[in-house]
Image (tube, rainbow, N blue to C red):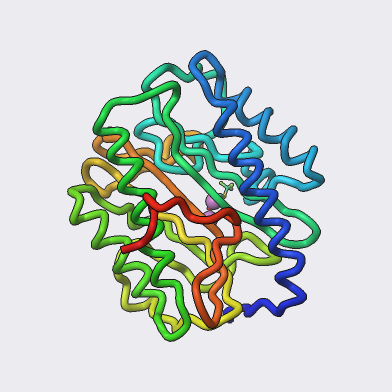
Length: 258
Ligand code: MF3
Ligand code: CO
Ligand code: CO
């Protein structure tokens, strides 16, 4: 069952998404060469607390950290540890915040200091793929229209989307129906309706789409060791333009959807 949000629900959900976006901004600017991923997670925990929220991840299926921090060939669900971030690494930070009863879910990949041109291209293509998907998040379309826009954009640019992990509805809990794959799946073809709130989140590999899970039971890495990037926004379907709840400022022109 897909839960449509009322205007009253949205009055509570918008601030939760604003907090998630604000925390992600702060964490992104904290990242620099020499910090450990544990320091990043602790910084994120302090930001979430200062905003009056709670991590939506900590304790979810026994997940042990406040955020997901995935470095280089790590795709998603990376666990904070003593790893020191180095200039040239790329880091995917995923931040889910529970605030006054609703969850905001947003992620971004950033370079540590700077990075090579292929890593930068991967990040640019993944972020733009998210925007292409968001542009399809309108009443009358179906979930597959979002999926197709993301998959086509990524593959046209020579990269591959991960199949094993998908976007999702989000609201009072982090994972609601429907699933929002980043590839066309005929089983995920629900009609989009105003009031649906979706976490759209392409995970993109430079190399092959395959992934595996490390022995820690969480960290997802590319099978071929290639770099991976992840961008995510929580988006509201309306009667008009999609509303990017975790990105309330205006979309920069370079990310205008085609
Ligand atoms: N943030 C992920 C998502 O975007 C879910 C993380 S679950 C956790 O759907 F347990 F790893 F935190
Ligand atoms: Co997320
Ligand atoms: Co998500």
